Image 1: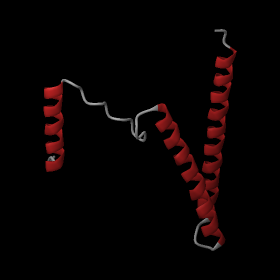
Image 2 (image 1 turned 135 degrees about the horizontal axis):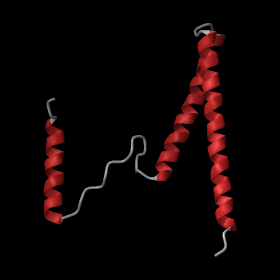
Image 3 (image 1 turned 120 degrees about the horizontal axis):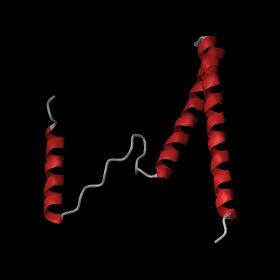
Image 4 (image 1 turned 60 degrees about the horizontal axis):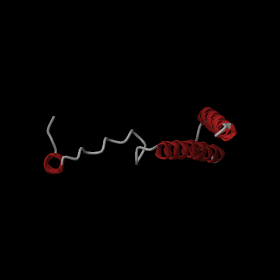
Length: 106
């Protein structure tokens, strides 16, 4: 597998920086989370859920104009509904946990 020149240069620069400063590089962010934080993960998940809903709406419009198969529309709408139910369930769990934290004695 050939190595890209820019990748090699960046790796060399990072290694040289680590050697001179002693600072270790930040670990790579998990797939989908830009900053590697919980907020980034939740944000990416919500964006993904919104995309599923938009795709279902787009397929519905295509079916109305006769460009899409009804089976694909039903599958997309069911997937969007399942995604929405999952988002609501996670939201409910987060709110429940937050309320429980508020009830804890200090």
